[in-house]
Length: 273
Image (cartoon, rainbow, N blue to C red):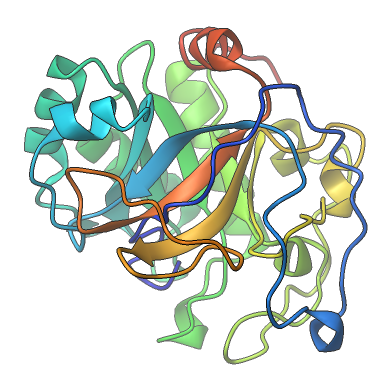
């Protein structure tokens, strides 16, 4: 995800349904295989995320491609709103898809103001999954959301909805290590037991075995974005790509469970701090 984060969707192989162990080892950048094998981690490959940068033809076709849920960008910072969000939400829900909304965090506005902007844009219902995209802002590094702002965003979402958003992040960023094209890092890692760590994890890691950040080591991930901006003709971990009908590209995510678990998780987003 770049500044228009989570902007795509990939097409990867579907795996079996058992819940993953989430204890896979990490890899140093120099040890990445040039042609990695297909993901060995089990999960339900039925969630995509998109934004206005993705061309959508038909949500019924997306649902017919064994996709059960769509997470769409709703807002960025405190003054940008995805113009395609509202119309696509109606179309997706009419096609029987679960719906989610995410916000790309920046530094320009307070966490509280960004949360208010997100809620106004997303208009979350009782079963709308909400997520904060917390990562470096590579196009404008000085406008990267801080840890304090991320916590203020979550606090505001909780206060207004009594629900916690998912935190979308990369393991290196969450662990306070250099990450992104500009090799930025948080001044300190996300701490276990912190407010952010109480949120469910949406992990971004495009290696065949994902690394769980320290703060979530006892819980693992709920969603794993294992492929980004997948397009027809791209190979997936050495395999032929399998396109999602109805979109020109997208990001692909595994859910840690089976289809019944996905519906339970999506439809019972109430949580406590």
